[in-house]
Length: 542
Ligand code: ADP
Image (tube, rainbow, N blue to C red):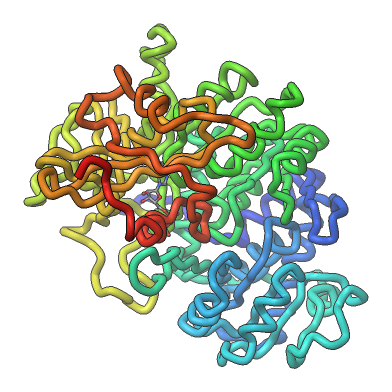
């Protein structure tokens, strides 16, 4: 027997309609590329999203056609999120930190028809426009009078003249909720980038999940700063969740340095912020020497790579800010787990609570996960057994765009490439990327554990652990370290710092001081590159 409830598609257009009707005066504040602050409301976003939809219609695009962006977090990007997807087209967010050749490759692979870019990225567009064979309209995200005369890009128009003259009325099409709404390529540390093609349904279910109290707990009382980029996995879905709950949204634009982020947070009463560890490192690095404090911030979600325990402690103890450690992937829209304690944990001593907070957290309803051994046999959830992590759920990819790489699933489960433990309470802890695990004498050493100890040393700004070939043990860990400006620590002191904090055989064999650790396009350490840089390196005492 079927239930007798209304069938209503889960569509992104309904989210912006809702925000307009119920939170129309809620604010959206952006630092613009021009440097000034732009301020308007959810009602304005909705009105201008409809103008975007009309502009897209004017391009004669079919439903499903791709409109690309190369843009910072800002209000025009937000309008494109709702206007493009709402009109039945697919918003393809391109990561501007990629090499221009990769940008061109991705735009061609996605067959982008329109490409909208912030003026910061004009040089990239000038370098690639001749190679992007499918793009028929280039749009600069600026006012008409800010468009330079001789960019060399044929037919270039300003965003404001492209959409600003369009009608503000538009009837959103009632499309199938399984239609594609947005596309994001994974950074492709191996092989060519592959596209995760999200649907309206998957995006809305993810946005509901993300807003839950034990996830990001977003509400109409929040002022939310997504430092996580809108060009990578939709800023963790925050733009959609914020519209759903009517939160104030604050966008940092291109100014991601500690000072700018701090000032914006204070000026806009930010209660909740989201970012990768490297961003928070810059923020705390700015605040500590001058003794600055947050007046409104009460929690921050940190993910994308392992959050060093020292950062969790600093936020909690020095600034009274709760850190929610999160884990996810492009292929998961991206949220998989988030670390919030259960009631029974609240009476545990601080140290025991800290052990939990360091983990990547519990599954959000909608995501299921398991760990398996090399033969694919499920491992126990005892918090000790580490194995390959597999996930499934309605916001996990079933295959990549254009079926690149064939079927990625194993018996319906998506293999994440991460190695993890899961404890009896369901808290998952990433011990490594499967390709980064160090195999020493038949045992596994977690590169994350080695890095976390180094990061707890007051002189260390960043640490990356890699395995180096060893004739007896196969591999031994070494740790590459960037020192904090003005701080000093010797190799011997740092190695001694490991004593008592980790098993003896897990202590790295060497410390290599470097000026910088190579970072990828999403701010993560690029260990492949680091290994190349260490090609001539020899372990001591061999
Ligand atoms: P990429 O394109 O590099 O795969 P993603 O943003 O999809 O970019 O990265 C997903 C990967 O990032 C995960 O598989 C995991 O290895 C790593 N990751 C994400 N969050 C965390 C976290 N909190 N702790 C450790 N690793 C994380």
